Structures are given as C-alpha cells and as structure tokens.
Image (cartoon, rainbow, N blue to C red; front, side, top):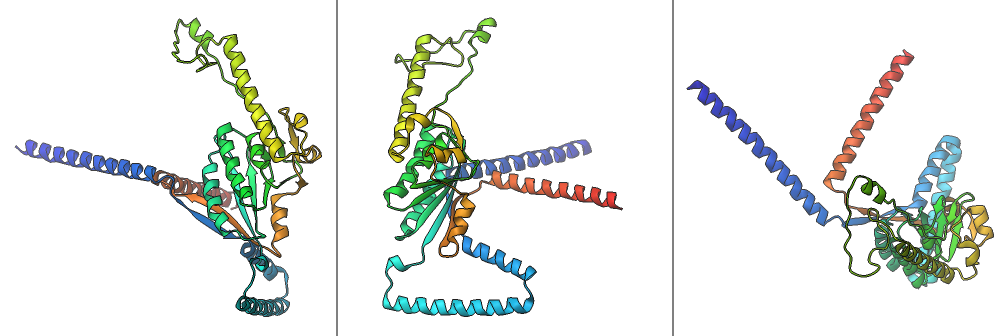
Length: 352
C-alpha cells in the first residue's frame, strides 16, 4: 500500500513537471509568434554628434589644460553662448527666414549584405529625416557593401533617389568598399567621396552555381524538373544543362549588365561607361582618375569639417529585438564576463 502511495506521488510529480514544461514551451512559442508579427517594429535613434565631440573635447581639456586657465576659458564660453542665445531670441522675435537657420547635416549608415537587407532600415531613416529637412540642409550616407542581388540594391538605390527627388543635396561616403550594388547606390548621389584605398566598382554582373548532374548520374540518381515555358529554368544545379540554356542565361546576364550601365550613365553622365563597366575594381586614388568618385576624403573628415558651423546628427532605425535575440545577447555578455575573469585570474597568478 505504501508502494502504491509513493508511486502515485511520483507520478503526480512527473505529470506536474511535464505540464509545466509544456506551458512554458507554449508561452515561448506564443511569444515568438507575437514578436515575429512585430518584427518590423522599431524606433528612430538620433545622436547629436556636436554634443559627442564637445564632451570629448572637455574631457581632454581637463587632462591637459591648467585648472585656472580652463576655468577662465569655460567662463568665456558661457558668456559667448549666452550672447548667442540672446541674439537668436531677438532674431526669432523679428521673424527669421528658413535660410538663416543653422544648417543641419544628417548622417545615415548602410552596411550591405548580399540581399541588401539594410534597405528596410534605410527606408525608415529617410522617411523620418526628409520631413525635417530645411533649405541648406544636407544628407551624408556612409555606404559599405560588397554588392549582392540586383533587385535588393535596386530598391536601396531607389530609396536614395527619394532624397534627390526632394531636392536635398546627397553625399555618399565610401570608407572601405562600394562594389557592384554598392556602387549602384553610390552613383545616385550629388557627390561621392572615398578613402584613398576604398574599393570602388565593379560595374558588372556575376552569377555562379555548382552542377551535381554527373555526381547524381554516377550514383544512378534521377533528377526530374518540370516547367511550363521554354525559359522558365535555363540552368539548374542538379539537371543536365544544355548549351541553349547556357546561352539564354548568359543573355539575361548581359541584359542586366546593360541596365546597370544605363543606370550609372544616367546618374553620372560625364562618366566614360565603356571604360569603367568592365567588371574591374578601382581603389580610391584610381577611381577619382576615371570619374567614379569626386573627391578623396573619409567620412570622418567630412563630418569634422562641418561640426564648427553645422548641427550634425546621426540617424538610425533600430529594430525591436526578439526575446531570442535578447537571450542570445545576455548569454554572450555572460560568456565574455566569465572569460574576462578567467583571463584576469591567470594574469594575476602570473604576476604573483
């Protein structure tokens, strides 16, 4: 009798434990589905770059300037700022034309992958900034991309075209690489600046895929592909490719290349497209010689040159993180802390 009682108690515990696991699993699935539906939600973050460098400058001054001199300098700066605010209020009372406002530079970043996934963020950032732009303001977009899918980068370039269509001066900065689709985006700008060794181009189209037909045939494996339409599928990974299919596929690549060249020519009419659309790449110093870029300059130098007289803002769209991403970041942080502690203990032991 005691055995039956203990068995029943054990069984109840097991059932309770399993039920708890199922409830937790169901909750996680429901949460995942809800956050998946909200995956496009996010918010705009704006960073005041002038304020950032002001704080950095103050910190450096505290380290290198004598306290009495620093105190006098700060006092003079406050006096000047007060006078400027008073003058601004006076102007505001009389009515100030938009042309007299302190100009703003809005800085956006595009870090491209093969699918140009960052185009979604770029869309949101441009939609947020354009209504705030006043006459005299400009946009700087820092593009870093090795290129990728034509339709993805075509959409990203179209987002940049919205800036041009609004009559807002647009500068594209390439610090490292703007290849293929990256340059498709860059050529939309009024001006392209690049670091001396940034990779620019190529204006070309690439497609490659393996073919496993002979391997399947060797192992007596049949592969059947059913299509409707003569050119629904030109080349495949598993079937036997025909010369006719290869020719059609090559023709489609050439047509895409022609569209790419036309797009670049329309945006940079002074470019010798026959010379640069060979699929080659150019480093910044050479790219300026062939007209692919307008000036050798890093994005940092461009921004620094505006800080004295302009208000500079970095704008980015941040996606709402899923619980899986948050959990992964927490685990990554815990792992980093654990490794740091282990490294520190080893260092202390070695120094002892």
